[in-house]
Length: 401
Ligand code: PLP
Image 1 (cartoon, rainbow, N blue to C red):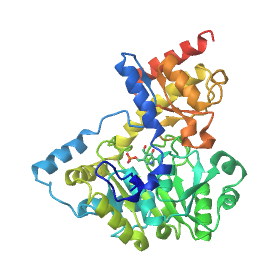
Image 2: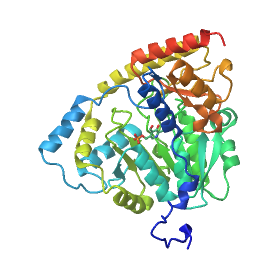
Image 3: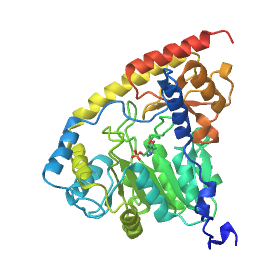
Image 4: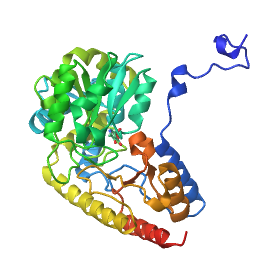
């Protein structure tokens, strides 16, 4: 009897499900683990590898959690969300995103990652193909593969230069099921224009595809055109699962709160996944999320001024250390080219910077082949981290090879 038969002997163990054989585990976590090793050895590390708001959760949100606990809001909530929160979500997406959400469309989820995982699970069969612009947010590739599907990558820079429709058409096959959309973009901080969103939506409609729209950074746009939700265009709400998170806007990464807007035809599978994966987000967290959605816009203006200041300081510091970089309009990241002196292999460049300058970044290759030759720096860090990191890079660049 072999270990693979499923009928074991007392000292044999069933293996993990085969679908994990092709699924990676975040390389960003590997960078973080190396950083933790260096810290444990007593080194000072300038950490730019993360992706979290630099500030704590606003006090009114914390107070709302405390008040919910005092009211004993600690029991099961409906698995799709507390009615008051779902209502606030409907009002928000109608007013701010122009999404024609009906009363039953919002489902509260355990952060954006859970919303995305559930959305892909709702739509993908093994063998399906997913259109994705590249560079892309790394976990999406693994989620696609987990579901037995594959990704068809559309290089963003070339597509924007030469035409989005033609680039999408070239990557589309009879197996294409959906397009994963992310704007503002992690890792580049780019924002697609209204005209570009409109063009992509027209393509999705014409080909009869679905869209999963990841709008994690909708509020972190510092200049230029504002955020555009694909589901706001005619005929798009019906074929789009829009995924939002409170993590970035409200500095709530650890709370695990987000929401999705799901058209009627996919609501039952989506609710089923949410029911059987989490059976609803923690009830007190949902009351805190409701308070977050009620915060006045002035909160965001202040937060954005802080992000802009950090972004500009890091852009200037990186340029002074030999990095080639345009200032991105949004999100939390810079995605400069690796300076020539470090070569074009982003993994080895990130390793050298970490081991020699004690500056932690994420190699661009992690975000797809189009990310090779780049490094991702988060500018959402303490201002003295920016000053210290830039100084370390300058000394490293000036040191004799
Ligand atoms: N989408 C993008 C593009 C992200 O960068 C992130 C987080 O880094 C998420 C979604 C999900 O965030 P969370 O699971 O914290 O809501």
